[in-house]
Image 1 (cartoon, rainbow, N blue to C red):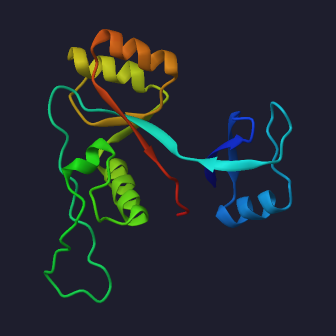
Image 2 (image 1 turned 180 degrees about the vertical axis):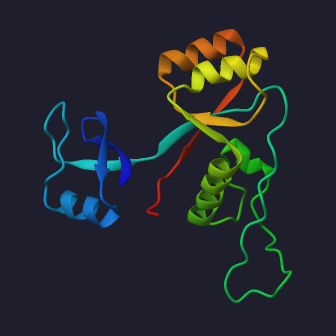
Length: 164
């Protein structure tokens, strides 16, 4: 199952669940996906965003990327993703899809997914009520505003979703 953030030509955002990308593509081509607010079938995928709690300490560095096929053993590409990727910014010269796949893998392996409990967990980590750890999850715009007002540091990262 794959979830896509979608938007219609009227800029209404909504979510769609599909068996895989091919299922999404087939339904989109067949005009079977429509905005639940206005009924428009002119729909496009959007970037999906997650929030990560970075606390008062710096985020860990990204692991080195896998060597491209055909590269020499021990050869490190000159433009490999670095800790700058933790900010969600792609280093110059790094192709987008491999960068976002590496960023997604990094977030999934180095940050605990707390889902919609992100705001509460970030507050607990920040106050010392919970063990300090890297967390990721989702927030509402209201929760984001509250966290900012409370001085809880977090980073919102938009990452595309890829089929497994």
